[in-house]
Length: 291
Image (cartoon, rainbow, N blue to C red):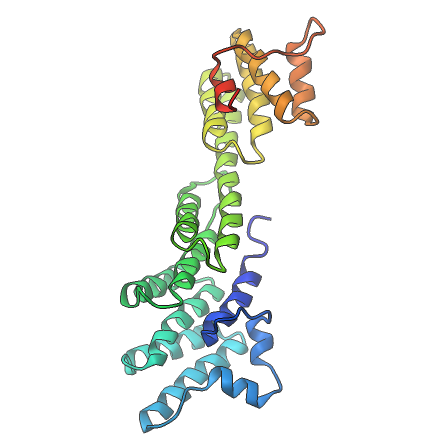
């Protein structure tokens, strides 16, 4: 499933942002908050108290953390918003913005999470946790990816945000996960092209279908959709009587995915004389694969 590990990773990762530690935490935020060690909890969660205002900040902020630990994300987000609005110059207001983002993300309120992160990015562009803010924007976009039968703008938005994390913060602890999710997002976009291409083939519009499968090969070649796309090109070119391109698509399929069922099907489709398919010099398909 496309998004199966997203929230689990975000929970673990956000334990880092919660305490603003330089060392990644291996514990999930809920296990961390439920620790029996009062000393550990105080060190991680409680602000330094020196003024009466500090006590009010601590009370409100920790009420948000308590609500978070109980899964009451709506209440948690409200408490962190209160910290930000009532104590805007407190160092805890800065943390509270990210906590709002996380609470809203956990509550499936992705637009609110993105708004909080964008506010953090605008107000604190040089903050040590700015990479997390960009990463949370990307995760919130990623969670809104639709089924391939629907509009894929959310998928493209997610891909753009994930690639921005990789581009801006290549050494960040979030870069590897962003890269993995970007691969899945590309596969999803390729899947949409495949879905539309199959639809055109079903209705006999071979050329329109070929154009969709061509997009998969030229734009999403590294995705899992590539083998079928090459087979569909073989199928479409054969239907149009363009045997040289059909042969090339089948040959490229065999060179790159020799054990694929799609290659076996393509081989049977073009090898009526018993000889393996051969690539035609100058074909766009061969050039796309560096042949």
